Image (tube, rainbow, N blue to C red):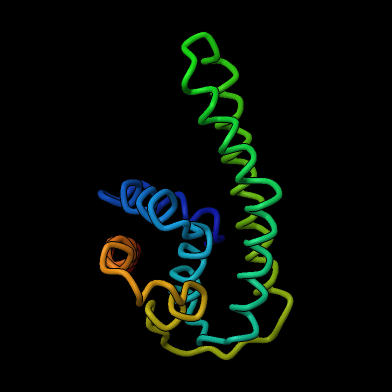
Length: 158
């Protein structure tokens, strides 16, 4: 399953959208990085500081240069009732930018040999989002994503 497909399936789980918005809006956390960390666990990729650093750097650039400007414009458009069509187009562009970012993150994994084995979600999350250990509400939102990923995994198993 691609990172994008994983993200879409996880997004449908109860509580995930709300938790992701808490991470993004209240804590400035990259939801794409959080999803990538959970996906790496699902793929049994052992935590690797080099890969985590490359993914973090890629996500930071993508989000600053592409995703954040679209998000800011979408939020401005949402304040005006007469800009509904423009807001919808910006929302679609923002989602496409996130899809492309996830594609870039997945390509980083495919570009290098990585050790395989059973990985714990928190190990990847701590590498990619070290601020997670510093805030209770941030940890709670990440716990929601971890639990949704576990439930999604158990449903996918035969």
